[in-house]
Image 1 (cartoon, rainbow, N blue to C red):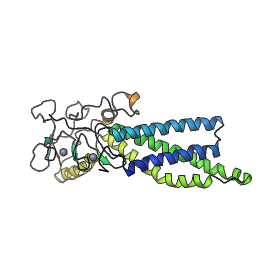
Image 2: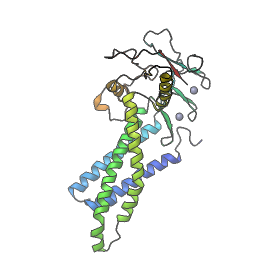
Image 3: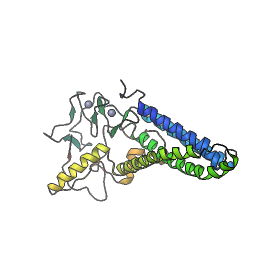
Image 4: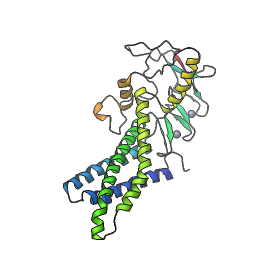
Length: 293
Ligand SMILES: [Zn+2]
Ligand SMILES: [Zn+2]
């Protein structure tokens, strides 16, 4: 069925077609018009741009195909476990979170995805552009793809503007059909794409800094409002401080932060919280049960 993970859908074809179209315009129209493909500057730019485009496609392929994270079949929350002092409970009733559709307990931060028809570990959102959920196992890959794609679209924009500016005068003299029109059309199409990618990147950098998923951001806004109404202060339990938050998403090896690999970022079932690491300022006294839907 189209739309189910594992299938090539129209949005996936659109993303690949967009990458191909922008790549063709930048390398075969804009660079020749501006720098020439036979010059050192032209070759260097074409090579750097091609490497970035390939990295983009590789990260995209991984984001599409990597399983976002399955709940282990034997998973049962250990309420007696002293090392996991925090358990997410249902907002109504206070029971441990259980998925009726999958017939298993939900680990902390896991949610049921209606499109994938199963629970996803540390679910962020279901993304139609990769026809896959973004969860614990592929969140870093997704983030790195957005970073590569945003960088590539800014680089494309620079090449396209350069190409458009430099293509007109030469062609008027030679009388050859100017590639200027094609370059400008590509630039106009690229503009909203670059803006969306940059916005998406800024949004996810914000989420990583606060160790929140998109779902937790929305639930946190509601929890904050409820806490304020009750005269309290809401504290996101997974917020360990910016550095630890980044490490928990991108991994401990700083040299691998920008690589689309997702090793060494935990099992997706148990997460460190601000209650189990010593912080310089203690977290505000809050109920250690986190109400989630
Ligand atoms: Zn489920
Ligand atoms: Zn999904």
